[in-house]
Length: 283
Image 1: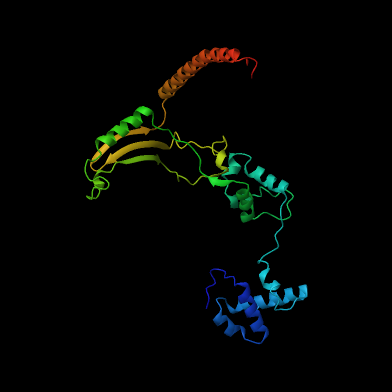
Image 2: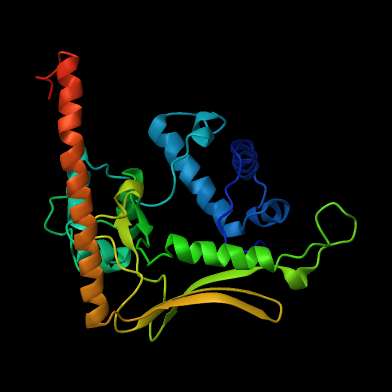
């Protein structure tokens, strides 16, 4: 007996053969033994085909009845571009709406006030979002190593790189001497990666989409390097202290001042160059 866990769609030629055989008097029971469908499916196919033939005034052997057979379920009701835009606007109006799962948005009735031809289903809502270029993404950022830290890690890796067992020398590879790097956030009481938002590929850093990878009260960021029986340099970013915040602000202010002075020096030079070219009025 065929499995009922997955739908099996018969080719058009096989459907025509089955309907013709049943019309000629072949029992559905014996026919089901020869085809990868259940007896009940053959009965529905025969009844559905006869109904379509009578409605379209076509004989049962007309191939049009089998090549254009519609799918199961209710007829699709197409939405206008304005209705789709309204659905997208609601789903992306703020952070809370973006982070809602599809079933939750439908269950909460977020789109019920829109005058749609029928109530949205989960799959219809997701198809609208996917067609518009949206996807469920998990964007964010995490603190990175500065140039000095990267240089120190690279230098340590070079110093511990083996001189033997190189690629192509026929001696194999010494996996005990492989350098591994680890950039892992350690989180407490949180399922990492479970929180996602509706966003386009170029919109992952929008204010209502982006989320820091580091939470001051529940996570820290670990950067490390290690090889067999040897630990390399590591860095841990934890909760920022008031003193660290003050130093970071001071460093940022100093950098902004340097950039401002540099711009003040470059602007007159650029204007003078434009003046010599006769383009002093440009821009």
